[in-house]
Every structure is written in structure tokens, then in C-alpha cells.
Length: 215
Image 1 (cartoon, rainbow, N blue to C red):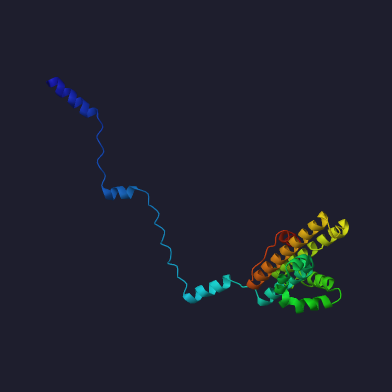
Image 2 (cartoon, helix red, strand yellow):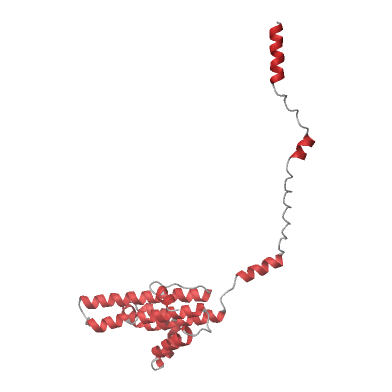
């Protein structure tokens, strides 16, 4: 019994004393000071109704009426020059020509001017497309009209080269081609006219890319 007591005393003497628990105040003093939390962001002032309306007006800039008018008028050049391709449709469907009665006075005036096609072409190209005083919207539409007018010359050149005659398979192919060119040109004119009136930019197939590279 005495031996066991002596062993316990010896072990208790060899064991290091356990550290006393530190108080909360002393622990705070020993810890490094922490950075204060960032201040909350200031409250953002909500814009009033007048400021919001001004911002909307600034972000929405409608196309001027003069730009719409010039762009719409530019597409009349290829349309007038494409009417010759519709003669077979007009002969087959006489009622189709009634749709063009409203523009007959303007078309008669256009045909009465000598070399009207060449004058209008160079006036549109040199006076509008190459004129930096006009906006990009007007110049792009004018360039599209000029490019389309140039493409409309190709069927006439092919007709003069191959000379399909007035009968046979070659003549029927020529009639189909003329009808397709007229329908395509009329669709481009209506689409471009409506887009220009609304202030939007029309993108014509096979024409828009070529016109964009010229600006």
C-alpha cells in the first residue's frame, strides 16, 4: 500500500502542471487586433421619372425623316430598271399591271429624261454614296440600290451573248429567268421601301455584303 502511494506521488511530481484556463478578457488582449469591417456602401439614389425618361430618349435615337426619304427614293432606281423583266408576266396576267398604275406618272417622267438611268446611277453613287456628309444609314442604302442596279444588267448581257431567239427551250429559260428577276427585284423594293419608312436597315440577299464592303 505504501509502495503504491509512493508511485502515485512520484507520477504526480513528474507530470507538468496543466495550464490554467485564460479568461476571456486576457484572450482578447493576446489576440492580434482585427481590421475593422468595411463601412456599408452608401445607398444609391434611385433616378426620378424625369431622369429615367431622359435616359430612354438618349438611348433611342430614331432615324431622321430626311434619311428615310432619301433611302426609300434610292431603291426606286433598280426597281424602275427591273420593270423590263416583267413584260412576260404583264402579258400573261394583264391585271398585274394595274398594281403599278399609281407609279405610272413617276415612271413616265423617269423615261422621258434622256439617259435617265445613267444620270440617276452616277448621281446616286457620287452624290450620296461617296458623300461623307450623309449618314452611314443613307450611304449604305444607296450603295445597296446601286449594287442591285448593277446586278440587274447581267441578265441583259447574257441574253445578248447567247441570243435565245423567240421560241424553243432557250426562249422558255429566258422567260423563266426574266420572271424570277422581276419577282426578286419587286420583293427587294417592297422590303427596302418598308424598312426605310420604318427607319430600319434592310439587308438584301446577295447585295448587302457587297454593298457593305464598298463603304
